[in-house]
Length: 195
Image (cartoon, rainbow, N blue to C red; front, top):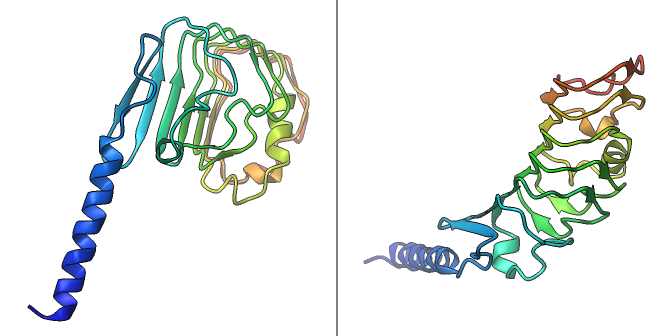
C-alpha cells in the first residue's frame, strides 16, 4: 500500500471516529420538558410543553453540542419576554419560538447567535418589532451571513414604524400575515433588496 493511500486511510478513520464520538454524545436536554435528537453531526432541541426554562437557555450544553446545533424549537412555552442575550453563544441554523405568549423582545434579544438562517416567531402577541429589528442593525455581515427567513405571522403587530436595516439585505422571505398592521413607514422595505 502506498504511503499516500495509507495517509488518506488514516485520515478517513480519524474523521469517522470524531463523527461517531459527536453522534454518541449524551443528549444533555433529554428530560420531561425537552427532547433532543442527535445525528452524527448535529443536535436539535425541541421543547413543546409548558416549563420553567430560564434565559439564557442551555448554558450547560457541552461545547460540542453548542457548535453543532441545528435547531431549537420552543413551542407552547408561555414566554412573555425575550431578554437581551437570551441565546448567547449558541450556533444554530433554525430558531422557532411559535405559539408562546411573547409580547416583548428586548433589544439584543437575539444578539450573539451565530449561523442563524431562520427565525420563526409566529403565533405570539408581539405588537412592535422595533427592538428586534434594531438588534439586527448592530450585527455585522459575518454574523448574519446566510440569514434569509423571518416569520412574524399571527401576532398583534400594528405598526411598521422603522426601516429594515441593510444588514438584512439578503432576506428572501418575510412573513407578516395575519397581524393588525395599520401603519407602514414608506421606506420600511427599501433595504431588503432580495425580497
